[in-house]
Image (tube, rainbow, N blue to C red; front, side, top):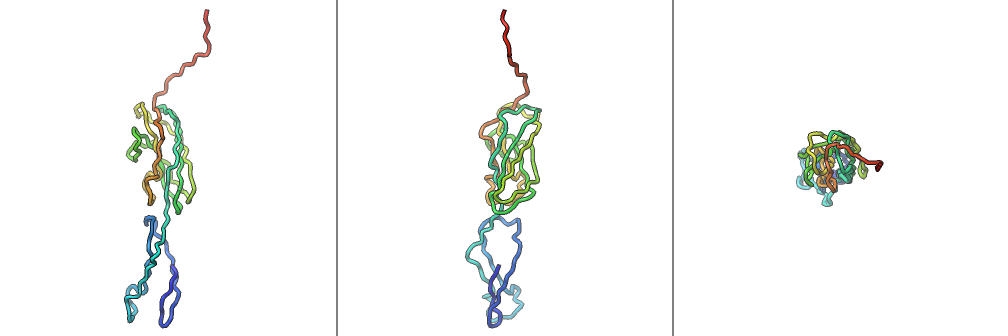
Length: 193
């Protein structure tokens, strides 16, 4: 903050800097400056020691977005399965030490209460940058065969203070099929008498 203060019969420039708390939500804020807040100096008028900046200051925080999830259409229980997802920091502040996770869901609504397949982190991400998560898991054997959605959640531990949380979740458009490994016979030659 830079401003002026009346001192004696004139004015003097005052400049102060500070850190914005990381717990502060992104949004519009007004700056308020107060001189002699404890009224240590006796003045003729004690009511003119405060001023407000009437133009809001925009605090641009981080904004994580899960922008893509790619998985194979079929998962075999107990076998390797590849999970890929992309996260973008669409906000104005860098991030560090957040986590992302993949979930298995019986419906289109992905939540952190769905069974978690894997969590990855800590992850750091600069503004306007992306990171691709690429993991191979052993697909759980305790999952019933059937059709499922795969969900990808940026900030799965809900550490990051964001103005928009709704873009943290992405899911597959179509379901994947979970099944057991089965033999696949292929005829290569037919011999007739």
